[in-house]
Length: 325
Image (tube, rainbow, N blue to C red; front, top):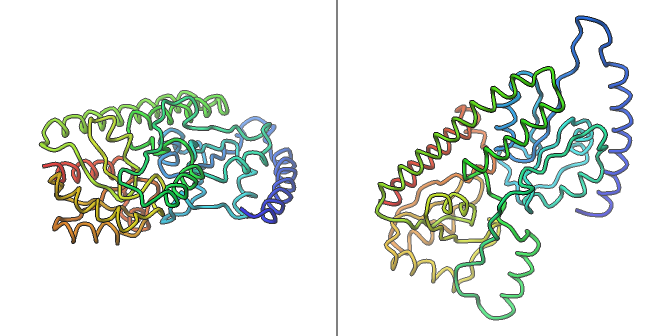
């Protein structure tokens, strides 16, 4: 993010904080029969938005900063986003290197007003997967190492393991209970229902994997490490943690050979990134393609169809059931 933009954001945020504080002081209910304004919760990725809405229900207002259809790895907030964020009561972000802008954003927030939730803090994380295929010389290796460093040491896609999304959701629940004691019982109840749904999803994935003959699948980018680790599968990724990374010609050739040699019958691509590389590999290897959704964000079609985390993860389950036959 450019220094000029950061300076502008800092100024606007400071002004906004002062304005929001004054507005809150003026609008805080004092008399009987009045209720406080709903807590404003801001999130950075769809799975956290989903968890917050499931837990908070009608008691909170939830805003996800990354717009529908936008890939979160390369998203940067606008000055308008930062002004809005300054009015948050709770700011929940994924962390672990996913949101490269978040440290600067957090630095501009009033910690007396906004409770900040790093949803992966203290979590057992996987290291970002090194590219699985041979590199073309030391120059390319050095460039890839720098790029990996830019995007963090760890794989941030924890929400694709339902048990880890449950842990993230519990952090949000705990924060809501602390922030809004009046609705604590509802938050606890809603969290327990969400936890039950995620436990059932976890069980269904375990049951599916026991019925498959293969354990290896190929995907567009290295987003499914936690899912693979949880269920004893092996992810073969075309690109690294960031989907913008594309394989070199020699790596592309190795990937085609890998598909053939390991009897992989599907190359799986995603919703928010171009499928062209996956389609090339599938065509060269003579196999099929299908969609495996990393749930980094919803598309407009997902929203229109009322799809959510659970329904999309169940679609992923069926896709893997077919791909692993």
